[in-house]
Length: 146
Length: 494
Image (cartoon, rainbow over all chains, first blue to last red; front, side, top):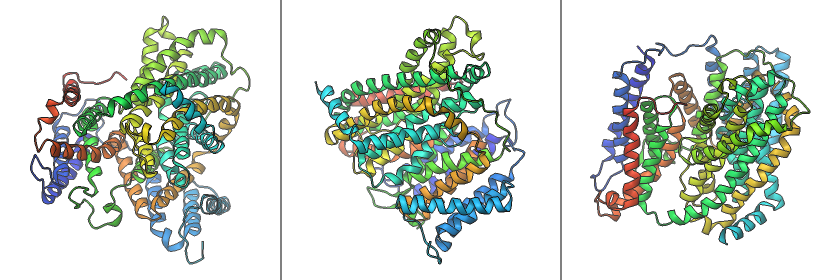
């Protein structure tokens, strides 16, 4: 299946969902649009375009599968680290989470333990100083108080 | 003369020490962002927006604007010395700029890029100075029907300039419209697509969405490739001043690039990237020796670098006169103005002349700062490029996380950023562009409001869009643009 078809089908699902939501919100009349008017017609437009993308013959030079790069694990680990950071931020506090986050990513980049730990600690403290102390950003504190 | 008193007033505002400082910080960060590949101006401005909440509106906008046009300067340095575009609008600069560096003419390339940027930036600010107040007076008479029609035209233009496929660009615009409906409906008060989640009830935040689409996803994409050893040309410390021959070759391309860039910058969706490609194509066609292009032609650096800077100036026109953003960066500036309690649009020049004239005149000062700053600092930027990406990207991600958190001091916006980061990564893998999504997301709610207000005005009749000549004209133009790509298959030979 061509890449356009895969993504087209995914968007078709999104479009159907939006249109159904729009219907349940109430379209209003053409002359007095209700809250569901834009979601519904936006969904319909997206749906029609997705169908067009799916049925259209794929361009001859289009490769079949998404371009898979040699090193596909790194984006996943990084995306996971970002999500983990968000989930733990208000539990552990800014400095510990930032330390763990940087440590993980430096280790992912195959830096040595000593370098990773030192840089992560320095980075976390520097960011704390920059954002909390200087720019007065309200960063979450954990059980340790920072 | 109204304009001259305005400019004078603007300089009084922009020359205040605090505003000068913000302007300097803006253009400095902008150059840095431009130099560093993998972090573009849109993500950087979104990132720094929360840190300007405490500043005055003038200072905040002056700084954020400085980041934008500063990035246009910085991008060329990386293109020329490393053959990697520091920023998307400098992609074409690699073609001839890097070849010039290989030929030992890095100094001339860097010099002409800086001077071309300065000349074009200044010319486009001059055009902005004269055109913006005039247009603001014209658009003052626009009512909801004209706005609705104009925004429809804007969204169509956006897809017309799409680099990949028109269908996909239209799809992204539709997705953006849907994203724009998330949150509480202002007219009925009902929640749309909120699913009882607090963060979504307030609507999708522009800052986390942009940081996700243009920041996080970019990093994820870059991570797919193991870093190769970058070959960085030793930055020249002398020979940055273009010779008389260089000037002879470059002056017309710079002027042409300025005009082209300015007008493309005004159009929604066209912007600096298209302007730089268009300028390169024009110069190659106009040249008597087109075979020199790609082999180190200085015109191939001068024209596009002028065009992308001029486009950055032109992009302010729709923002300042209509309150409609022409690109993702302008969308954030629109948000920034509104956060500071200002309503961008034709009334801005009357209601907040300090902001209107302060921003415009700060750009004269900023461009001058960039020229003075840039050439001596090139060795420093070059050293920065030696920092491996493996050390840099954890910090880019971290800054995005802190930026998203500090918008509202909760994790919700961070999650939104993460979702759009992952979605943006997939979009890029499947050849979709993020820009139409962002613009439609910002313009969508304005369009919806204008449509509903128009229909209230006309008591429900759609005749209002046809009987008012300006609105009808915009809609007719939009229709033509929609049909045209169906006749011709590929929209732009970019």
